[in-house]
Length: 80
Image (cartoon, rainbow, N blue to C red):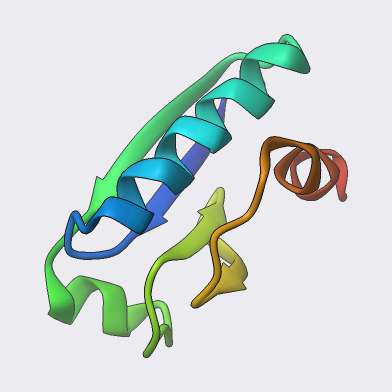
């Protein structure tokens, strides 16, 4: 089943790094995935995220306001 990984943020350097780390993690796990960048502040707020960058998987927020490395993101992607 395809996972949708949402990167929640305005496109700042931390957001870009989080996106790269998420892509790396998903590829290492061999997942069928899509990365969606949510840059509109109103859309980000719908997730309840007030600090960026944020990471959501299939619409569920997994991390807020911090830059995660690929290893931590892999743990979140495997979390049921």
